Each structure stands twice: as structure tokens, then as C-alpha cells.
Amino acid sequence: MIRRLTLTTRLTFLYTLVSASVLLGLGVLVAWSTHLHFVELDRDYLQDKAHLIQKMVNETPNAAELSDKLNELLDGHYGLFIQIKRGNEQLFGSSSISFPTELAAGSGTAQPVDWADGGRQLRGMSTVLSTAQVPDRLASSVERIRLTIALDTQHHNHFMQVLRQQLAIYVVVATLLSGLLGWWAARSGLAPLRIMKERALRVTAHKLDQRMPIEAVPVEMAELANSLNTMLERLELDFAKLMDFSSDLAHELRTPISNLLTQTQVSLSQRRDPDTYRDILASNAEELQRLARMVSDMLFLAKTDHGIELPNRESIALEAEVASLLDFYDAVAEEKVVCLRVVGTGTVAGDRLMIRRAISNLLSNALRHSRPRSEIEVTINSLKNGTALCITNTGDAIAAIDLPRLFDRFYRVDKARTHPSSDGAGLGLAITKAIMLAHDGSVSVTSTAGTTQFCLRFPRQH
Image (cartoon, rainbow, N blue to C red; front, side, top):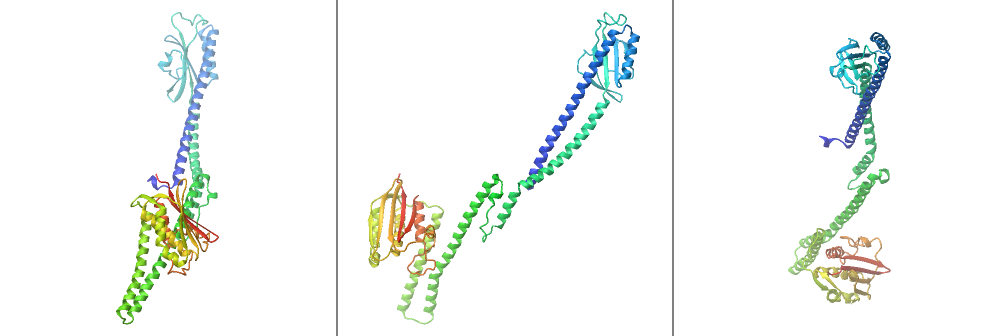
């Protein structure tokens, strides 16, 4: 049940509970302190009257005169009761109240005793009078004279009853006000959360630019708002990439499928000789191979997204792999009148086929975009933390805005795809990046003044 309560209700309940506990404790403390104060006042009052009676006894020569003085004292002090006994003989006392036996036989303690007699609430104490100066007719050599004195505390009890009622009313009213104040404070304090909730509700697949108001929330919530903004930025970026990926994928698949469909429909429009059908099937096979490569590349990237284990880790001499690839691309380079050369040596640990594929992608890309009669240089350098392999070619410079996205899937600098037949599917650089990440390495690109350089960095072997 408590889980269904709102945070405002929980805070209000806790604040009210704490306030009620504090106010109730304060009320009990005030009532108890007042009671102790009255007890102390009554004790001092009774001790003062006991001293006065002791003085009267000492200065009075006979019992009759003493009785007159005590009656006069009682007349002037309403609610005061006196009993004087010598042994079991009562020398003075009123029969209107009865003193408790344990008080009359007490040892003269300074602490007063409370008891009820009829409708009265009494507080009294007992003491033994000094007989050093007692008149002869009152003194006794074998029996002591005991004074028992009491005070009617009805007015104190009435005051305490009124005080307790007022304190109870105050505690209830103050608790309700505290609860109301707690509800207002909790609601005001949680207002930034409601603002963040409204902003979060505005976030949709087509409206990911909403951000939490960091400046409008308290410092304690600013970190949460900043984290949510960071998450929204990542979602917006990833969603944009996903949208681009879907669009590019549809575009890449549409071209070969349209070619296959068109060519098949034209072939079926009229009867043709076997050689013509053979040529058409060969053309269709090329388109199907292109589709197969694209699907294979996408499957490879999908595997790398979930982490890929290197099939075979071995020591690889980069200069040998580069030389083999240069031989492979030699015919294409001759056709474009491009010179290929490799400088430096280096050894890395990894999967030979995967590293060869990464280097091949960069070489193929460099040949595609190099100017005729230019040079492609592959440099291998040993670094402090590993080995770097860089491929440099000259051609059209790549705009700075395109450099960070070159390794995205299906991303092309030429958005219009004006040369679809010569370009790849746009997955080569993405596969190169995935291969380098699988080897705990990295890939980077720079392009300035017509010179473009891709660098693969491998970590140091252990």
C-alpha cells in the first residue's frame, strides 16, 4: 500500500510524524516540568510553615495559647491542615481530613507525599519538632512531638488539567499546521521534478531535441538533469544514425534489385536466343554477387557490434601483407597510372585475414580516389605504444564536416551517389573500423590540401 503513495504524500506523512513526535515530547516535558515546579513550591511552602509552627511552639508557654495561635494561622491560610501529636496523643489537629498512617509515622523526609482524602487532593509532610525549648507542660522525656502538615493542591490540579488540555490542543493544531507546511514544502521542493517529467513526456521519436532545464533545478537534481540530457543527446545521435542507416540500406538494396527486375522483365518481353539469355543470367549473377557481398558485410558488422573473438591470433609482418596487396592491386594502379610503394616495417598480433581485409579496404579506397599519375604511399612506423600503418594518396580533399562520419555504415561523401557503379556499398570503412576495434586498435583519417591519409594503429604486442 505504501508503494502507491506519491513522494509528496510520503514526505508530508514523515514530516507530520516527526513534527507530532517533537511537539508531543515538548508538551510532556512542559507538563512534567510544571508539575515538578509545583511540588517544589509546595515543599518550600510546607517547610516554611513547619518552621513557623516550630517557632510558635518554642515561644508558647502553654497548650491553650498554642492552639489559639495555630487556629489563627489556619484561618489566614486556606487549605492548610496541621496535626501535632505527642506519641499517640493528639495535641492539635483538625478532624476534617485524615492523614495517612505512613506519613504520621514518617521519619521526617523532606519530600512531600500526595494522597486523596474525600474530594480533596492533598500534599503533606511530617517532621519531629525540637523539644529543646518546648514549654514544660508540652515536653516529654520519652515521647517526641511530631508535626504533620498538609496542603490542599486542588488549585494546582485544576491548573495542571487546564494546562494539559491547552497543550493537547496546541499539539494537535500545531501538528496539522506542520503537516500542511510539510505538504507545501514537499510540493514546492518537487516542482523541478514535475518540470523534468513534462519535458520527458515531450520526447518522442520525432522530437528528441528536448532537454532538461539544468539551470532551473536545484543543485542536487542538476547532476540527474545533466545525465538525462547526455542520454538524450546520445539517443538523438544514435537515432539519426539509425535513420540514415535505414535510408542508405534501402537505397543500396533498391539499385541492384531494380536492375534485376528490369532486366528480367525486358528479357521476358520477347523470345531470345540462348546466348542472349546466358548474357542476361551472367549480368544478373553479378548483381546477385553484389547483394551477397553486401549482406555478408552487414552480417560481419552485426557480429562485431556484439563483440567478436579473433579467429586466429598470430604475429604478422605488415610489410609482407602490404607487399602482397600491392601486387594484387598492381593492375588497377597501372590502369589509373598510380604508383604504389611501401616504406618501413612492423609486426603486429592479430588475425591475418581480418587485418589484410582492413588494409585492402583502405588501398582500394585510395586507388578509387587518387588522381592519375599520382602516388599512393604506405608507411609503417613503430610507435611508443604500438605500430602505425598509414596510407596516403592525393586527390580531392574531403570536407572537414564529412571526416567524423566516414566510418559510418553506408555513409558517402557523394550524397547524390553520382557514380554508383564505381563506388562500393559504403561499408568498407565501417568494416575497417570494426576490425581495428576487434584488435584493440583504432583508425583515423585526415585530409588537407588534396592529401588524404588513413592510419591504422595497432597496440603493442605483449
